[in-house]
Length: 378
Image (cartoon, rainbow, N blue to C red; front, side, top):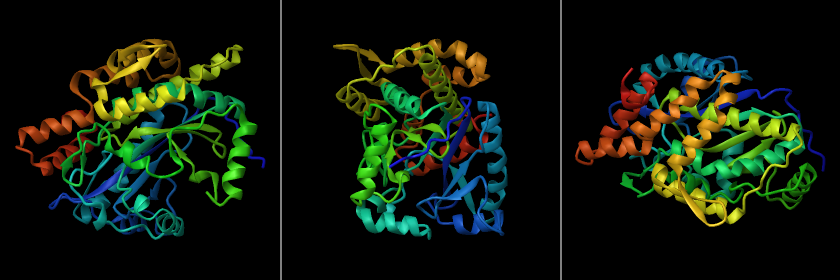
C-alpha cells in the first residue's frame, strides 16, 4: 500500500483548537455547534470552524501559515466571528482539557456519520470522549524525515504535556492528575504513544495491515500523540491538553515549529536523530500527566531531571531557531507559565479560593479565554 506524502518545502504551520460551548448561567457544556456553524456559513462547511464529536464543541483551525503570529491572527479572526453568535444563544467559549463539572453522559453526539460510526465501534470509550486538545501541524520535507522526526519528538512529550496540562477535574471531581484528558484519550485502541517505525515503507505496511484487517477504515483513525499527516505533509503534535488562552496556544505552536524545524535541519546535515526507549517515553508521559510541572522525568541512562529545568533548557536550545522563525515572544511565554502556573494549577487555585466551587473554575476559564492571557487579566 502506497501512501503519498505531500511534502512541505518549509516548516509551515497549522493549528487546531477545540473550543467548549458553555451555558453562561449553568456553566454546563451545552449543544449549539449546529446552529452557530449554520449561521456562520449558511452555504456549507466553514473553512476555519468545524464540527467535532460533541455538539457542544467547535474546532477552530488555521490555514497554512508561515509564522506563529500569523497563525494566532488566523485563529483570532475566526473566534471574533464565533463569539457574538455564541453570546446570542447565552453561550460562552472556553477551553481546557476537560470540563470541570459536566457529565459526559448528558452530551449529544454530532450528526456526522463518521462520529456515529466511531461511537458504534468504540461504544463507551468514544461516548466518554468529552475532552479537548490543541493540535499543531508543522511541515516537513520528506516522508522518511517525518518518521524520524516523530520518533525523536517523542522524547519531548512530557515537556508539552506538563506545560499544557489543564484537566485536573472530571465530572465534578478532582482526579489527582494534572492531565486527566491524556488518560481518557488513551482508552481508544489507536490513540496514545506513536509506534517507533524505521521508515516510511514500514509506516505504509503498518497502515495497510490495520486497514486490511478492519481495524481502521482510514489512516486518519490512528490518533497517536504525535503522528505524520500525509495529506498535509506535516508532523502533527496532538499531545497537548486544550489550552485556555491564545497566548498559551501560541507558546506550544512556537515550541512545535521550532523543534520540528531544528530536527529537519539536523537531518539535512546528515545527522541521525535519536529514538528514545519506548518504556522511558511511556513513563515520562505518565509522570507529566500525573504531576504536571512538578514531574521529574527520566533522562539519560538512569538519571532524572525536573521537567521545569528541561523546559528551560529546551527554550535555550531553541532560541536561535525562534529568532529566525519570528516566534521569540511566544517561546518566552514558557517562562511566564513556569512562574504563574499551568492551567491545572490555576484551576486548583481558583477552586481552593472558592471553597471547592468548580463553577468558579468555569468562570475563570471563560475569563481567561476572553482576555487571551492566563489569569483573566489583559
